[in-house]
Image (cartoon, rainbow, N blue to C red; front, side, top):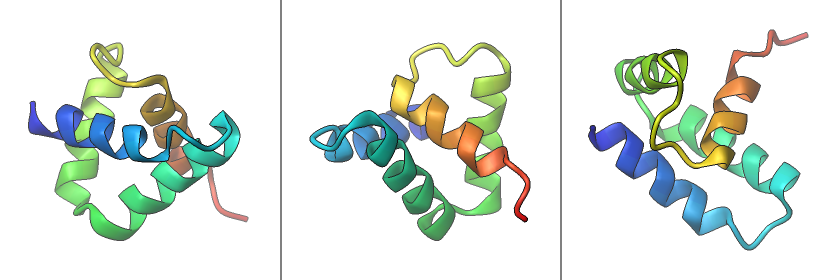
Length: 69
């Protein structure tokens, strides 16, 4: 699935930061540049077990799912 590959590439670009910061950067990138459809497909992969996803992507999706406020 292309969303997995793209999300992992984004994570690789932020890998040089400490994990907590990198996960935040990945989450912000996904929020800013991905369509709701793409995010939904990525969340589907996470819900199915996250196979093939970089741990930073898993952390980023968890951040995106947190309620605001």
